[in-house]
Amino acid sequence: MVGEVSESVKLSSGFILGEILKLYEEIKDLPEKEILYGSSDLYGSFFQRLNSLITLDIEDNAVTELLNSRELEPIFISIYRFRNLYTIRLETGYSNKILASKSPWKTLKEFPFYENYLKLVRTEFEGFGLKREDRILFLGSGPLPLTLIVFLKQHGVKSTGIEQDTVSADLSKEVIKKLGVSEDISILNGNHFSLSTGDFITPDVSTRVIMIAAQAEPKEEILAHLLKIAPAGCKISYRIYEKGLMKLLNRDFLLNFPEGFKEQRIRPEPPAYNTVVFLEKKEFLEKKE
Image (cartoon, rainbow, N blue to C red; front, side, top):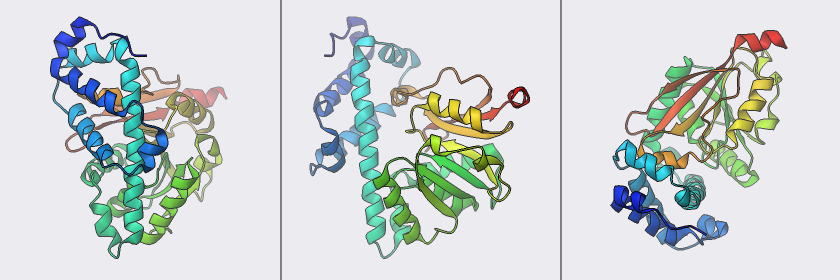
């Protein structure tokens, strides 16, 4: 049960807190299957309200006070759960639209966050120093592997997506086939434990980097595994939110990386919201082994 919200939080954040609480009351009891498959049009409006709320320009001290409030923690967990599930629903819906479309590329570009992905992928392409014909691994590619599609379409980068949900993995394979890019993008049903050292060092694989989706969890476990199997100098990235109330979406946020990674961050430019964290395995760990 959610406890009473302190007066200090109420007074400092007024309208924002009120909107958060109203949204929480509307989504807190929704079953997972209802969010994913329910027929109500309200869920889309809840999602839009949440996105409008978390992208507001809010002073850092107010955000910090809200996010550090223990009594609000169950509320943020519920909101985070709803957003993740509805994102899967949204991507699944657009994947099915693409499969039914006579103009699949046009339909793809109608995805609400398509422009965000163009900016985000360009940031990652430049940050990694990639070039055409390079190959990336992407953990958590989802039912609509838009990151992989944009990497190929805009930058000529090939990829392998790894998705642990079988239904999402199968659907994304159909999307890739519909778009005619199966030769350059492949989808595997698995998770981070599906990766081995051979995925990084086999000569005919030519994998340059591995990327971790914002929703891929738990990141500490994922990074610990990658630290074991990746060669020194291997480059890894993942996406987080650092601006305003977008921070509440970082339920699996890593403040401390496993020892052995060097870190660099590139913060977002509109319309992208994600900060991209670039990691590189340190040389000295390789020498110890």
